[in-house]
Amino acid sequence: MKLKNIFNLQKLYFLFISRRILSVGILKEKIFKVLIFIAIAVTITVSTVFLYFFLDDTDVSGQINFIYFVIKMQGVNIIVWTMIIFLFTRIIFLKKGDFLNITNQLPITHNERNSSFIFFELLMSLTIIFLISMAVIIAIVLRTDIHYIPLLICTVIFTSLTGYLLLQLINSIILYTLNVIKLEKVSSLVSILGFIVILVILYLDIVKSITNINYNTADFSHWSQFYIEMYSNYGFVVTFLIFVTISFLLLLFILYIPNNFGSEDNHYIKIKQPIKFRLTMFNLYILQISRRVENLTILIIAYFLAISLLFLDILNPLYAMFLVTTSGLYIYTQTDAIRINYYRFNYSAIKDYLNLITSQYIYILITSLPILILGLLINKGNFNLYDTLIIFGQLVLIIILATLIGILFPAKKDNPFSPFIGFLIMVIISGFISLILQFLDLSNLYNSILMLILYIFVIYISCLGLIKLKEEFLHEES
Image (cartoon, rainbow, N blue to C red; front, side, top):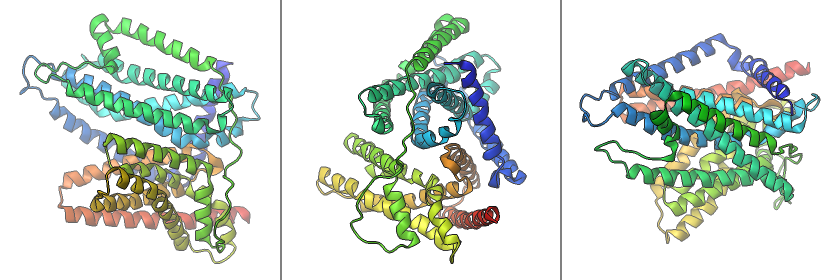
């Protein structure tokens, strides 16, 4: 394996994002980029101001180093976010095999190709972790000058990088084992299920540790504090050397394990149609969603998560169906071949949009039935109708947002970057809107009216996007 090839592929990925994603569609508009920058700046600024006043320890006992305690708790947050981001990338990048096929003509090995994507995921994870932690870092620096910067580096960068590499090593071992025993076709599914189990165990472990905190002395012990304890006992230089050594060993093992697994060629499962459907756009969309391998993989993962939530009694198991709404990120490209045929007839963007939303929602309603039935059996018929209706209402809203991302950032040629970047942008915009609503401090009625107006605007933009995409297709055809 040549490291030079791996690093050159990083340049290719960033070049692809720059030219094929960040300079296409709505992202090429300067005003949209300015709005995104303003949203990020305002969100970080408001969060920093809030945390700055929160870190005022004048009313805290002199026996407690409050800022040090907050940093230790941030170490736990970093571990949790690293795990969530890793699991999320596993789900979003289920389609990366098709995208990586564009590098087949390059003089590189499969191992180099897949290893390069591992490095790329690592860089994205670190970037997201840094953005999440930026407000905390700035607030602490403003409170203490530069005294805690080395400790923050150990907490944020060292912890997140080591955690991600450790998770990647576990993932490589799982994939290699399944490849050896000839179960590579279910490797992605098994891997994600395994990490859901790890996430549940992590959650229970953190809850147990937090309940044992001595709030009189702020004494808190957890394995996520490894680098914090190393820094406190031995200083930054020794901690840095330990980090470099651990990271090098993890990378060595990751690169040593063969990971030249080919992408799955079969995108659909073979099922016999129980009922003869009319060939309408809506019926074709339903068949497209229900037969896609990656959609069924996500559904199985959602069922597994629902069972975990049900037995652990953490959340309503129907919340697991939020995972299924991620198919909305790809729904436009999955149904594009059907849509192209309708371009030649009486195509209606509004009708197309309604079919997109309705087909996803009906699919989720039908696939939610096993979770509802299992919940009724385990809870001996106890059923909270209000909570269930609220969750199904939230699912509609998430479907609308996910579909908007899929339309504004279509994953052409099954590249996984478009929906990922689109998702991040939507999270930033949602966070910005939430801050605005909190600042205005309106009543629930006015907040509901504003959210209704916002979703009407989202629907309008989605329909406008469908019209624009049709015009671009017809222009390319002519």
